[in-house]
Length: 257
Image (cartoon, rainbow, N blue to C red; front, side, top):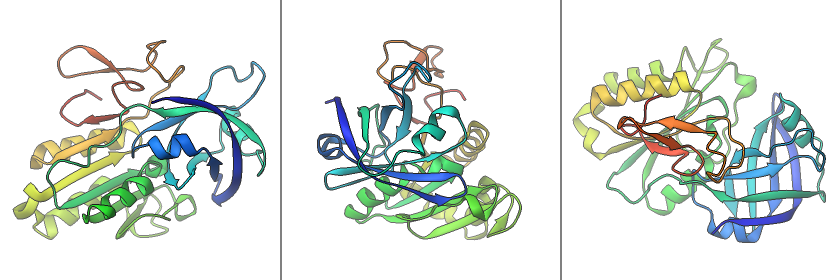
């Protein structure tokens, strides 16, 4: 069920360098949302910017949802000015989320930058299912890390300011290799979200080790419901799927990045 509503901003706080977490009172969306789904927000009542912006549901807590965003573009900079008590036009929950019902004992969450956005919500649901969770997070520097709501965190930064110096996929691969996790791989499932180069490297690693993997893709979206067909993703079957309607979560064997 997709809900279109004018909701109330509960809080909007700076949690890292240019990164904000907004909490929105939206009971119907919170009650119907699944990890990996997103909402569309119209950040202005004017025509500039014209299109709504998609945001992963960072968490759903009782009658509220949370989003997280980097205030670097026109739309997100406007959104960063919203204060508690402001009204905001949203549509959601949209898209298909992560599958948490297939068989696995341990979830390995892999996030790059604000690719962490869907994972506090996923972590909460996985904990309710008594899954073991290991979270690998990569960022450019320690100042761009957001970790609340996550479990068993392992960090990599490009500049080495915190944790492993290098990419998060290099760090993940070294952990898997050094701890000989391959003998237990049938019980693992990978959940990934981040920029395309990171996702490509993650998919290659999962193919190499024959790991069950789902990824949430980041694409430009307009309508968020499949009408404009502006967020096409090429599948391995040669046809195009829509990130907003068929995704944003896909099995790693399903699409071509």
